[in-house]
Image (cartoon, rainbow, N blue to C red; front, side, top):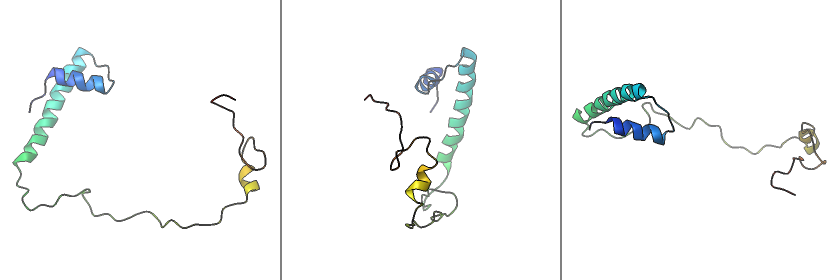
Length: 96
């Protein structure tokens, strides 16, 4: 697969990039090289190789979700610039 300058212009438009003509030429050459390297992977024999999501084995690195008691409401609301004793008070953004 070969990329053309028109392909790079379309991708830059979709990515909302404003590229000069010189930058388009440079990016076209660089992307053609990248696609060439990726096409080399088609030459490898991957028969019997299982697909993987990560290069190294991983396990769940998150702690268990355990319910714990929280601070008192008054202590939490003490950090709010405006509160009514029960809730945070914020300015209306959608009207009255």
